[in-house]
Length: 216
Image (cartoon, rainbow, N blue to C red; front, side, top):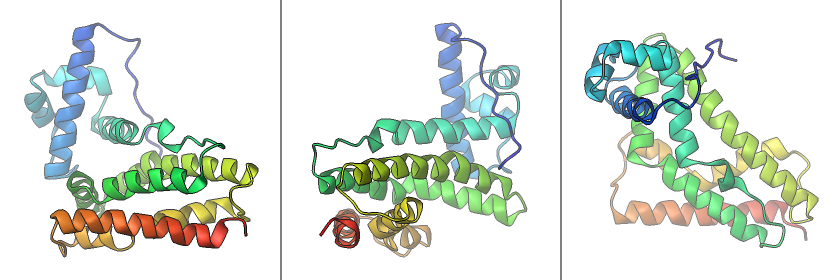
């Protein structure tokens, strides 16, 4: 696990403080995507947010912690915990399809791809800790929530899974296919046909998953 410890602001703060914090996070997100971690300075983040560098440090401590908070805030905003709610009264196909479409569209989103490109650039320059940070705050969190959903489905008799963590990995691989990598490499036209292919791939992935794991 990463040794970087997140820095939290003390108490809720005044409304103006919360506005500054939100502005700093928004500025940092845009600059990290545009310039990667190594190419983004705290001075640039402060200027982009319209605050002093001292204000940035007082809210987040240092650039590592600010980067972690950007990732955490972005993921929690796009994939809140209730994304993975399980309703035993709802058909499991409906539940899985809801999650599949949210994830597939998000994974292939231009901003998501830009974030991955920025982090890969940092990894290439010898900063793999930022890739690990994204893995911890993003993938491990969402996989944990998805595993919980799948286990609830097993307990409700909707799925038969001997290995829930492995089934979780299979589910996410099935619903996005090669679309994310094609977007990463710029090998796709990102128009309406691409959006339709994202949905079709997600739907087909759910069907395949259920063929393997739904009760006979």
